[in-house]
Image 1 (tube, rainbow, N blue to C red):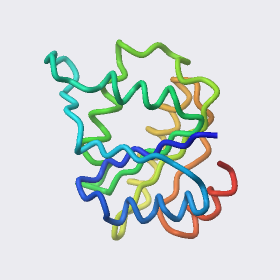
Image 2 (image 1 turned 30 degrees about the vertical axis):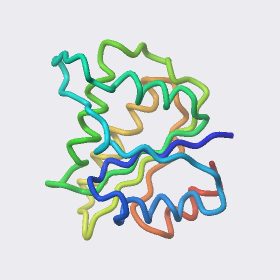
Image 3 (image 1 turned 90 degrees about the vertical axis):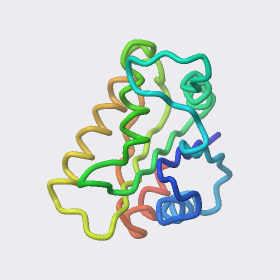
Image 4 (image 1 turned 45 degrees about the vertical axis):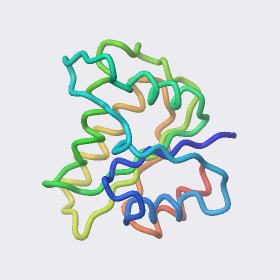
Length: 149
């Protein structure tokens, strides 16, 4: 089984990565740092855009984990941009058969922030055919989800 961790944080060794390490304890996984890719905004078209590379990595994985720090009461822009880019080039159900986990870490996210993030990511997973395993916001939740991936 292959696991892909997509890190939305600009800090490659920060808290989002630490939470991923907890989730994937003992598992072999690959990390893709969105900050290393040219991922232009929805509607833009540039020759050096790397959305297709990111999507191909997702298609090669059996389990996809996306991680984001809490920025301005929501997921970070890099992750939001990735989700937006799915509109159009990716068909509904195209990532079917994969498991999906969302890691959302921050100092003190409020309940409404967590609810909106959970709704967005569970809908994203369902739309593209993935099994939504859940969201972890702390070490205890990550350890619990680890058993399901």
